[in-house]
Length: 113
Image (cartoon, rainbow, N blue to C red; front, side, top):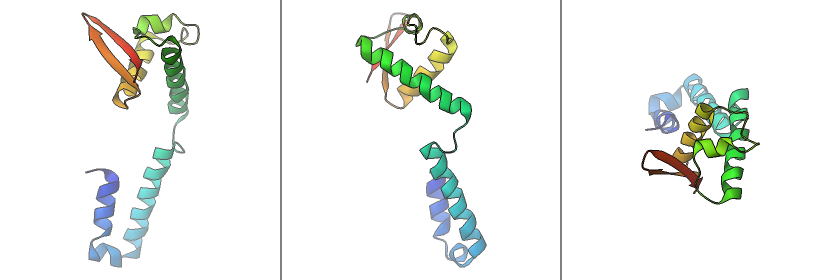
């Protein structure tokens, strides 16, 4: 159960509905969740990482073929970043379904989903 689902379930309890202070708290927590989801509550690092993810996606889309992290780093747009940074952001992109990871032998390749 997600936090939002939990707060909504708690808000349905009769005793909670009757307590204005508790309902205000629940509404505030749900609002914070909405802000985080919309990007309003993102840190500077998270915003910067979104820009790097866009660069990674652009390179993968432009090339149109599967690439390793090392191959991605050879592009000027991404050359300033470390292997670890690109790998971590690619993992996040795979989890969101934006990028597909394929393993061949001992190498991991990435391509646009």
